[in-house]
Length: 331
Ligand code: ADP
Ligand code: MG
Image: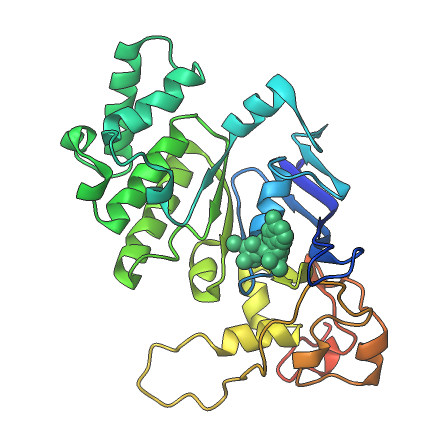
């Protein structure tokens, strides 16, 4: 297989929160031992409930927060904790698209200027004329009219603002887009339009995506491969088809069962997870999911399951994956 464009090796991020209500040594285990490869032209989905460490993983990869341990490689080069001019270059190649582009848009700056400005600051274009020309190209690329350049952020709908956010990211000529809950704030019909735009851009510009979301049905729609996170850890990872047809982890099973089916029939096979996602402050030594797991046994409370490759390219971390009903039989 080809060399991955992006590779995470045992990436771990703890936040110190000692003091106040917490003990001095208390740490949030936000991301623990996460490893994956991202290949050229693919879309890797990262799914998990709120607080499972998805955004922290993205920020650690980009060097926006310091890493606790582990390594990150871009095109085979070690970029762990990268600083200085190389970091600037890297952050052009890897662009983020956030949930709410409104938060990063200056309300008094016209959209055209908001797209031009970073291009000029980062010297992606040399002259103001080139920046203007490129801005109009980008607006067309993301499905906005040229007149949008002269409007202010508040004149746009949520979906249009997300198109502006995407245009700003594309202005840096990135190789990889890291989309963090990029469609989560939008209505379902608008979500579909933006997802289709992402797919169109991927083909047209030969982009590679890391697509982060809490909604498995959305992540499924766009991803070639999916990595499922729970309390900072990867609990399952497989190609999208494989993950749905041969689900190996009870948590993934529960997430899948929660996706509404396009039918009017009552769904009675839903698995309801009890309780909220537990705290990541000093997590227990056994399986992190065991408190909410409908299959948990004594072993799960004491022994941490390893992430193992059970079928080709399909990894799971569960002691009892082979007991999951409808799960995989090893061929
Ligand atoms: P997600 O994006 O999956 O919702 P996050 O990466 O935002 O999850 O958060 C993972 C965990 O790390 C959460 O428990 C969150 O409260 C914690 N966390 C995130 N950022 C910080 C920070 N700067 N300081 C302390 N804890 C943090
Ligand atoms: Mg997040």
